Image (cartoon, rainbow, N blue to C red; front, side, top):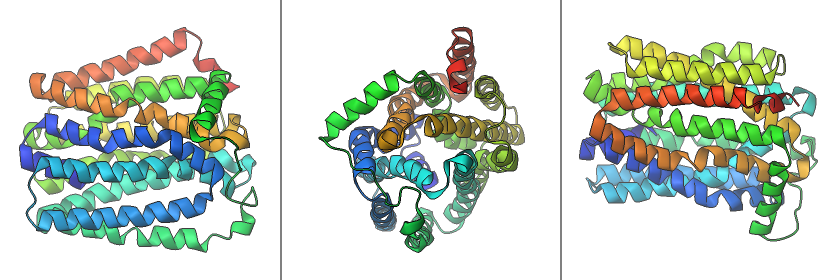
Amino acid sequence: MVVGSWVMFALTKSPAWVGVSAFAGSIPMLLMNPFSGWASDNWDRRRILLVTNGIQAMTAIVMAFAWSSGLSSPWVWLALIGAGGFINGIRLPVWQAFVAECVPKSVLPNAIALNSTQFNAARATGPAVGGLIIGTFGPGWALLVVAVLHLPIAIGLLLINTDLLISGKSSNKVSGKVFEGYKEAIDYVLAAPGIRTAILSVSFISAFAMPISQQIVVFAEDVFKVSPFWFGVLSSAQGIGGILVAPMVATTAGRGLRSRIQFASLLGYGFAIVLFALAPKFWVGFLALLLIGGVHLVSATNLNSVVQLQVDDEVRGRVMALYLMGVLGIMPFANLLLGILISTFGPRPVSAISGALLCVAGFFLYTTGRLVHLDE
């Protein structure tokens, strides 16, 4: 992610192109959503993760050779980023559903918190190290490191004893075709107000908050005017913030009303984005991103727990795919729009308005009584 946004900005010097690259990486995930949910409920999830992990490593290697060969066309880079998006579109819903197979349901909230923690650990260390490698050796070497780091994931998946999985096997067979199964899942979600509210909440976050992360490179180079290494440090701030609150989230998962947690998270998220947008100095922006990362972990764990605990096992994969649709369905277009608006009006006012709109969304969910369904 760091290399993709950095390369696109280096080639074009345009925030709009950064938004387009984020769109190219996200829209394939949207297209793959019906298939990934169906595959998760029909096929061996561990094998799917092994195959997609290997393809992702090969994609990183191809991107590394593309940079080293001097490939400078942004259109070709968009195609490469899009290829990674297709693989992620399959992998992400399967990964989320697979977590529920690995632990008893009584400790599932804690497992979800730990799963979110490892994601934020990657976001903390990856961008900082990536920025250092980019600044010292170039993005090609950073991409090769990405490829190598897929190996421990493969080893971890291979070491899993499938006989100990909760279901006894890695999938629940679902009859029917892909889109028939997808329609089943949609009807299921429409009849489940708690899951429906969780998807709506994450959709607001996807629209107003997550695209800001793709534009950190613009703040680093045009607003704070720092080197690639400090861009990596700035990009790592959200992950560090998540790690700082992770012990609390992991140990208190399942305690307290989820409706109150989510309301506070939405308001905190919006406030932190406004603070980042108006930050007068680099370190103020860094602290604001720390807060964003911490609030994001709380919110993501809370909403993920709601869906995982309220869904029935036979539709888990497809419903998790629909939950991720709350992110994948809106974020590509939000990234595209945000990049265009920032190119026109500048990063500070556009980002500040995004944060304010997220606060408005939080009050909307609270005043309309939708959030209480998260407690069911």
